[in-house]
Length: 88
Image (cartoon, rainbow, N blue to C red; front, top):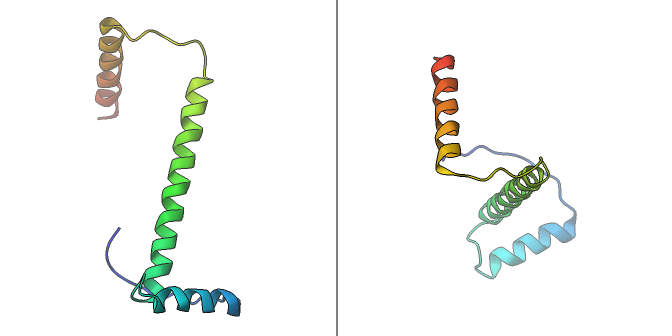
């Protein structure tokens, strides 16, 4: 993500606006924008974590487990190399 900033106008209820201003006044954040950016970053992290957890659950529910032996690992590596070569 580039560090280029752009403006976005949002509408907030007065109570939310006052809360944001209060957080900024207390010195936790230097500007309301910094606070909002932090909230958005945290939300994005949370969503990524939820997605990862969902994928892990799907993996656990995907079927009978296969033991990862050195032979199985090598088979997977060969398969992956073949897929990569095919796409080139």
